[in-house]
Image (tube, rainbow, N blue to C red; front, side, top):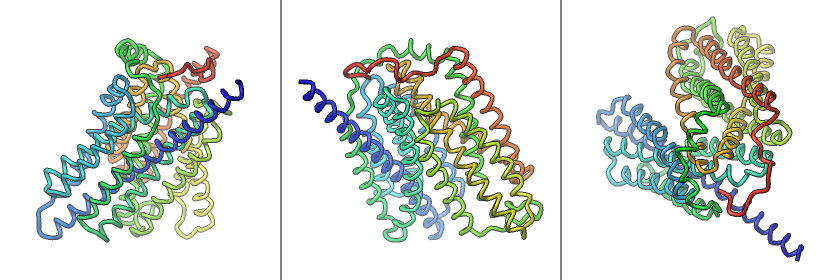
Amino acid sequence: MAEGVTCEQEARQRLDLASLALCLLGNFLLRGAAAAAGTLISLHLASLQSSGARVPAQVVGLAAMFFYSAELVGSPAFGTLSDVKGRRPFMVLGPVLGGVAVQFILLAPTIPLVLLSRFLQGLSTASSVPSTLSYLSAETAHSEKLRGRVMSAFEVATIMGIASGFATGGILWDALHHSGFVAVIGIYVLSGLLLWSVRDKRVVGVGRRIVGQWTAVLRSTSALRLIPAWVSVNAIVGLWFSQLDFQMGKTDDPSQLLVGGFTGREIGLYTAGLAMLFVIGISLWAFAFGRLRSTQIMAIALAGLFALVLAMLLLNHSPEGDSARILTLVGLVCAAVLIVSGFTPAALVYLGGLAEECPGIRGSIMGLYSVFLGVGQFVGSGVGGFFAEWRGVDGMIILTAIFGAIAAMCVATLIRGENASGATVSFEAAPLPPGRP
């Protein structure tokens, strides 16, 4: 009898692992489809401009704003709905909304429909991400080690999906032009099928105590300390990804090595290399979960951030002909980026721990992932423009240090709180009941 139960448990475990893989792959394709669609839309608008139509540059920026505003507003709402109605329908709704959005452009590629399409694509991400993170958090509730690896895999799938989507969009446009949107619809369909195949054991209806549990979360000092730390780190990401290309491509500044003098090809390769460093770093950090607490990993990552600030400052003021110094500092920058990359999966694991304390609103809490990401990148891009105008890359480095100091103070208070109470967010306290949320 015992052997029969063991075999049944092993079969269930294999099925759960298969569902986790399907969920991650579906998220990869969803992010790739959204990025490919965004690239195709930009190239479509550029082709309209080339053919004589008046397409102001502000339209491109407005389309991006429609996307991110929909994601910011929709994520908490869809997260809450997934708590009440179940996760899988909202995982699948993401690809459905994305496919409908692309069909608008395919059938009538006018500027108003382009803007509507980008808004629906934002809602697509807002629907799928909180429910996906809620599912991943619930499935790994019994093990911080497993949760760390799964959340790291989610981050890798997200970054790789976006990067692949950018590349795929350009290839589709060169090969198919406007018909490339048909292929994107196919990617959305495949993503939806994979997410529909995910087996979610959540019991629908456990989210009825939403108001009371949200009150508990908002009173939690852990949540209040995590929010500014995560917003600050995402602001740093938004700062560099919004400003670095422009700074490197502008008129050469002899006083700053990283300002001006770079070709578009060089800038593209450096940006792709930076993204790959994050992927490698997150993959390596996945093995640290279970050995280190998530707050400890965040602290190490922030120490790496200050090392990155120092290395970038020295690199930016290196003599142009001093190859040995430049190569050494580039190596130090790469090593620091690998360390810094551990912050996001660690913060996701910590957020998952907060969700574990209030499982009835797990989707709502995990929806904060998109909110923190969007607010941080909005702040970093906006404030970063003033610092970059003031001192170029030096200004960006200074602002990075400021945001890093804010994040470090918040993480330090989280660690002090853990040490004072003698407890962390626990994943091992009790066996999970059947049909856990």
